[in-house]
Length: 357
Image (cartoon, rainbow, N blue to C red; front, side, top):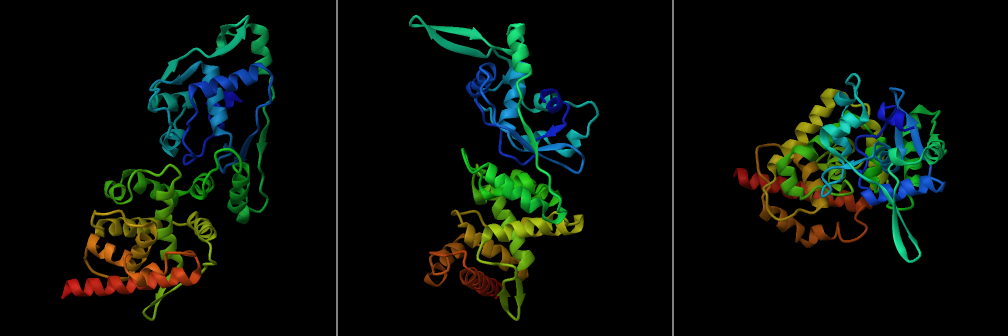
């Protein structure tokens, strides 16, 4: 399994959660192996390139890899490995590349000693359990320990992503639960998602508007919401109408993600241009609530002209009782969403008209 992982037979989806295990956690996993304790299965699904995408178990398999190599991340103060930086398509397609090489290029490794500590006669004793230092008999026991790799197969190609999303959700229902966008990042991998992550990672003004990168990918989810609103909600006869919305943001965003997988380059470029244009319109000031930001984005699609969305204008809307009634409770109900979007559209239209005059 480790050889296959190093040869990139197993691939960690590039937008999965960061690798965050400490050296002590790697050590504890090694101790479990040596003691013959069961290791939870690795769940995978087969990609179009016939590689095994790791759906659940990336922390374990990467930790096993580091243990077998006798290595750990050199910079111990910053051991969160951003897998997106490792798993770009152009890097994976290089000839004779190994996972160890991919990792070393971005995160230098260091030789370490893994230890097992125990007490004997009230004295703490330490054994070096680094893989290459294990006695031959124990090393063979470790080598032939069974770890199940379970491949999720989906017969219905049209429902593949929904089924994988549900499986992923169920697998992560215990422990440190993955949030909705983290699940989408693992399942809906496509050029459209690449574009969203590129904006989130490289657009400096977006970082000033939103703040620091969100640990559960809520910033990427907000960018996804911008695009989904534009895709499904339309301005008709001076009013914004909602299509394909059933009082649930998660379902709404999953539906859109199913569509976005099939977007061509021209469509992706259109969304990229619209999102970046909107970001340019926002004047940096106080933090703008997500519901107001997404409402402003959709309004900006239909309010033409060159204008800036000022901080005072945003604060005035946020503090207006007519707007507050749409965001205080049940903000995801269809009536609240439609009311909020139409209110902000009308206010932005009047604001731009006043500035023109």
